[in-house]
Image (spheres, rainbow, N blue to C red):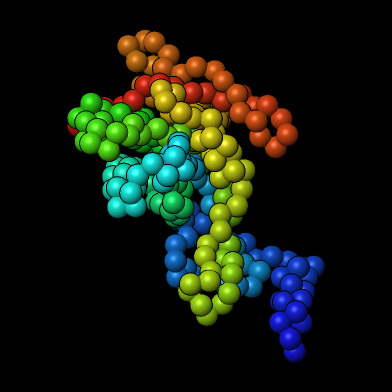
Length: 238
């Protein structure tokens, strides 16, 4: 058989009608998870999804030498990664200048943890001593962070028996909406959250000295305009 026949044969297997074996889980799958195969299997879990993306990254690539681009990206990604991991978030994807992370469990505390982490990242990357470190490169970091909460389905896709040609794929409104919310964020309003996140915020996540830190806004998602919330506040990292 030729390549066309091989592909068509595999597509018939993937797209065949019938049950899809989905395992509901309290844990987030990772590389090597034996619950995931290249057959019709998936793992579904509840989580708060955090997505951060740098603004103006194409300009950075065109403006600086390659080694300086690498330094800027590594500093930015290290900061976000450290704060996400410290708060119990689990990073599952780096894509150039973006990070996809999950905070597991369907709990109000999970949402608040993810939101506070975003505000920690915002504060740290815009703190005066950190900004001075970027001054020799004549670059001011700008970025957007989006957060939503809901179920996520993880499946394994690509070519079997070749780790360079397969990966875990993360599907669901919570992921897609977090990405769209991130697109809305830019300095000074770097953090955007969905309405469900706002509804479940604790007082200290919502208010600073009795003043609401969040401003009502919107996000275009799935052909409609949804209510969203943005903030220019950061949360101090000690």
